Length: 437
Image 1 (cartoon, rainbow, N blue to C red):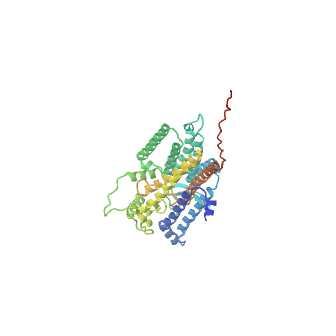
Image 2: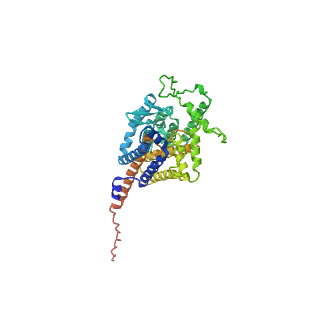
Image 3: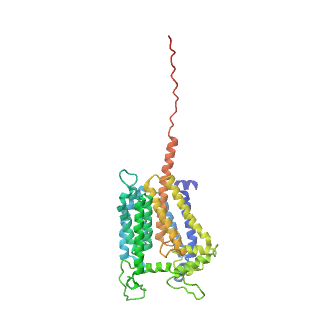
């Protein structure tokens, strides 16, 4: 077994252990969280455990992706970043036109039986392409990292703006990671502050516009049932999701209503309230694994709000999930500090790990009511094939970097130890001939 691991499993073994541990926890959590899907499958004559097995199969497929990607040469991965970046932009443009709609948003493309989110691909290849662009302006004479600012903003801005029309939270997430990567790439602090100021101003103006625009003038799409034969759908505008964004922001910041004996859940805050009930029910040590009550009432309990169910079942022990991610972040720091000698490798690892971490904490903060509701999944835990496989691509690339960096470091150490040492020879003092008179 040890020979197999040393031969085929390369890179940081602790990161490998973290990935496998997360997948195991994810499988057990989904067994409880997907009960509503299981009942639906059984009522239609299907297999009761089909949703769980589907999730497990995606996890196994993701593990295969990690194994395959971590053995690919890094130069090959970074070389594919540019063409796949442009392919992902084309897919993003096609999504609003021919994509599959769900909950008022077109975020999915279907190719045969395969349903996926192009925005997930765009996030990955934007990070890779941006890292390669940032690396070109590092450690060069007469060139400053600030000189490539326009190029960085184009690489980051084009996919982000396209994503914003259907998924505002992903737009904000991608822009945030992009600015973090520019900070990692040592752009001047003054320039970064200017960009942060412009970004904050843009957000303030956007939120202000949402609050001031009358709802009747906001573009929207009428939801239609499959049984209706004739419908009238309002035209989809560029900002047809604006009304949804406005309601989510307003619901989050408005004062809570008094919860007396006559309090009733309403449709507008149903998800948030059920998630809060799940968290509150967990108390310190939870109701026990598999004993969740809110899993049958909370929409998307198996996806966006899976952390709420973890808290309900195991209480504060759910923080172990966050601890695993913190250990992962620590190992990334060790990898960069001790092994990475390449700027592009360091930027790629920092970008991908930052995406995983920020997305994790956004999901957790939403689950406990600290952020407005969005569609950000909990990496490796939430149900969704695209999210799982893309997250595994992140881990695979990070392990690929650790494989090459650690191998190069070990090779250098070996060369130093095996290099023949020059024998130090002490020069004997010349004997002076005695002078004779």
